[in-house]
Length: 111
Image (cartoon, rainbow, N blue to C red; front, top):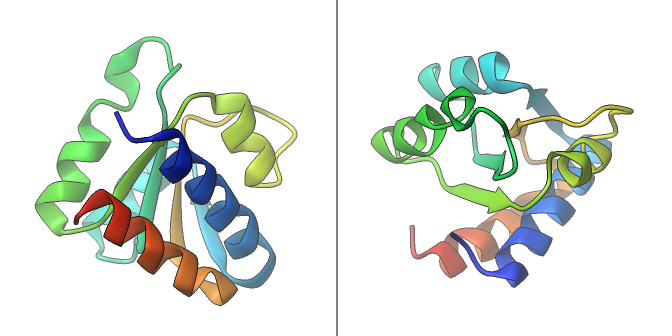
């Protein structure tokens, strides 16, 4: 589990990247982005049910060397990504103005 601070930064990075970069939303899209080496940061909600839906994402991200942060709620993550719906996971594929935020998150995660 990541700290509250990292969770906040991850949501902020998603919001900034939504405006100035490019996101992939939803578990299938995020999985593909990681596998194709496009993901710069993966953000996963911890309140997903059943957990099996997103369990593979942190492992896959680690395997591919992609930083992975967790946030407590899929509602918050969906809102940060500009969706009217909750989302289980988001990958930032183009950072836009979120580049420095992502660097900070990576440093905090020790990735």
